[in-house]
Image (tube, rainbow, N blue to C red; front, side):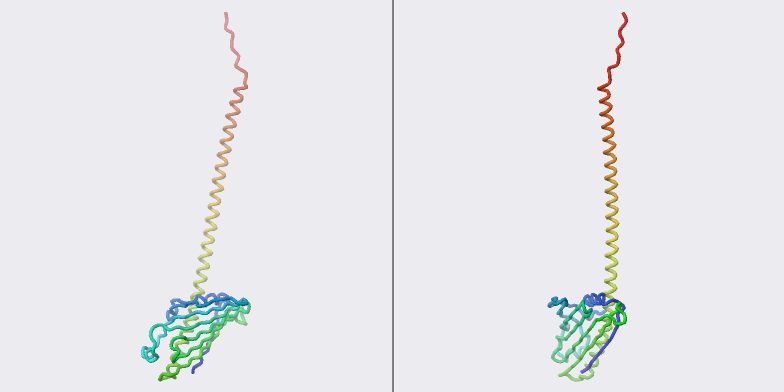
Length: 231
């Protein structure tokens, strides 16, 4: 049996890291993880509970997979709890595939850095146990190294997702600003049109009023004096 532990500090707030952790896979940084499927998700007492099935490719030598009698992708069950009040996320993962010979239990915790609330501390622990096959010590060391490499890629994947989230926020802000500018320009054009129409209407009213006044004056004016013809 082998035990493995790792610590890492993200230069981002806890809320940002947790959002990225949920969106971590699939990503180009760690293509070994093919995807995740939500089996159950619920909220109880303000805590978000999730159960997901993780599909991945363990890149072991072919002879090891043949020895374990396994073909195709590997599967693992992942249970997570997110407590926004305590600002803690705990993720526990247990392998489903190769379970007859290989047992891998992993626990991951995301918590704010006690020294800096704008940073997040990641703690990872894994217990690896192999039985029923030859070269157990060698295989456990190989699997431990694989887990360590995948953990590093997982941290890089979180950073990749955070950068993607920041890009999406910039795009949303840019789109919102553009939409606001378009709305203001459209409003200005509508106001200009209303003003022009109003001015034309007033001019037309003035012209009609002037014409009516002139016609009224013509009707009420005394007739012109007629000259009496001389005898």
